[in-house]
Structures are given as C-alpha cells and as structure tokens.
Image (cartoon, rainbow, N blue to C red):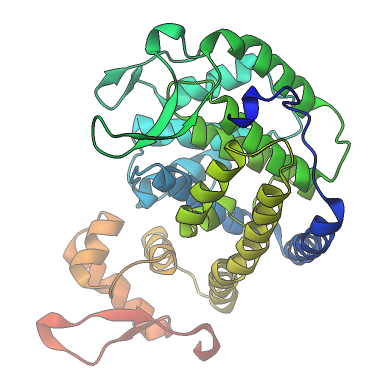
Length: 369
C-alpha cells in the first residue's frame, strides 16, 4: 500500500522532538547566512543570487538526467536580473523555460500558488509540447489515457515498481487540496512546510513529466518564504543532486510508509543543513570577485576588458590566450593583444611562465594588486 492509498492521507504527522535539533541548526545557519549577505552591497548580493540560481537550475535538471549548458543558464538568469550577460551564449528555449519557472517560484514567492500558475510552469518546461520524442499533455494534469503513473526499474517483464501515483481521476481534488494547504498560513515552521510540500507534490505526481523539477521549485518557493528574501544564497537542488541516491531512497521509503513522515523530514533538514554549508564555498568565490573589482576600481577599463575579467572570474577553465580573448570579446587578435598588454601593465593579469606563441595569462590575486 502506498501512502496516498491510506485512509489517513494526507494528514501527515511527525515526531517534533526528533526534528527539533536539526531544525534549530538549519534555521540558525539560514539566519546567519542571510544576515551576512544582507550586510553586503546589492551588487554582491545580485552576483551571489546569479551564481546560486545557475547552480539550482543546472542541478535540478541533472537530477532528472538532463544536462544543461551552465553558460546558457547563467545568460538567461542574468538577463532576467538585468545583469551583464556579455560573452555568454543565447539560451535555448528549453533553458529559458526552466529558468522562467525557477525565477518565478523564488522571485515571486509571496504570490499564491494556483492551478493556472502550475500549468504555466509546466508549459514553460516543455515549450515544444514534447518530452524527448514523446508528445505529452502540457499545461494540464495527466489523463487516464496516458496510463498509470509508475516509477519503475529493471528489465522488461521483470520491472520493479518503486511507486505508483494516484489515478488521474483523483488529480483535480488532490491538487485543489494541496494548493489550499500551501497557500494557507503555515501551522508549523516554514522549513518543515517546504519539506512536506516537496513530498506531497511528488506523491501526487500530477503531470506526465517534469514532476521532480516542479516539486523542487515549490520547495524553493517555500524556502524563500522561510528566508523572507527573493534572492537565493544556497542551492537545495545542488545538494540533492550530490546526494541523489539517498534522495530517491528516502522518497521511496516515504511513499511506501504511512503518514508519519518523520524520517523524510529529518533527512530533508539534514540535506538543507549541508546545502547551506556548501554555499559557503560558492559564495567565497563571489566575495573574491567583489574584492578584485574593488581593488581595480581606480583603473579605467573598456567594456571588452570588463567582459573578459568577468568570464575569468566565473569558472573559466584553463588560462586566457589572445585567441580566446578575441573570441570572448568579439574583437580582432590585434585588439585582444593590446587589451591584454594593458591589463598586464596594470597588474590585473599575469603572464604564465611559458612564453612565445604559447603565452597565456591568469588573473592576479586581489591582494597583489
């Protein structure tokens, strides 16, 4: 029997004493991180939000086995935030769609969830009306014609059913109840509500595809409500992807259990705690970038030079060369050479030891400028 088949569904219960410690730890770390970020300038917060949202979108898709181009994702988010997207590729329709959904969930977290809003998110995820080669119902609940919604593994004929969602004829009522609950003032801590919302939506599985990504967007929306800010400074999806095997194990165990979801909530709180710890590393790079720009604020740089420096600071792989500079800045090699020569003169770039035709460059450390 799956949890949604029980008479007590969805009257969830949990052991508050078991959760009190992990909840207090996570909330303390949340508050400390938000406080630190609010003390920084708006430019640094915007950059941090861009970095974290890029990771959130990329990793949420990776959990489903879909690989997105991080530069396309960053480009799409930067444009929506009004930030510089120079040198980044134009995002595809698929990338723009998932970014649109995630940005709406987190930036407009105070707006109520609704059936129409969920349909719009789903349509944004599948702009062509297809999931891979298969045509699916887009912007609407799955139908009985699509058959039972099962999560299975194993060879054909010997499949193992990990989970079967409620039948299609239950979806209208199930989703109406879920939306009412989500929009109601929280009767418990908002972080607990985020964990319940994630599990509840995944259990209903109302769409033919995209349920995991939408469930994580809903959880992020609830976490944004808990944080009270529309900028994201930690990525829950990045941590879920890092712990993907345990993530699916815990979801499956909860689907086959009863309405006591203490184990799922405890695991979710632990994952959140680890997500905030991991954010410290990512945000360290943002602060390093801010420090470099402060240290060279007195130098007059052209737009090409600023674009290349930003690319070097945004996880650029390898060292800079004249040809790479010309490609990023959309200029000739001669112009690239002059720009690089100026940056070396200013002490912003340093040539690597190999000279001649193989000359490459790296950014100087902010403290050395």
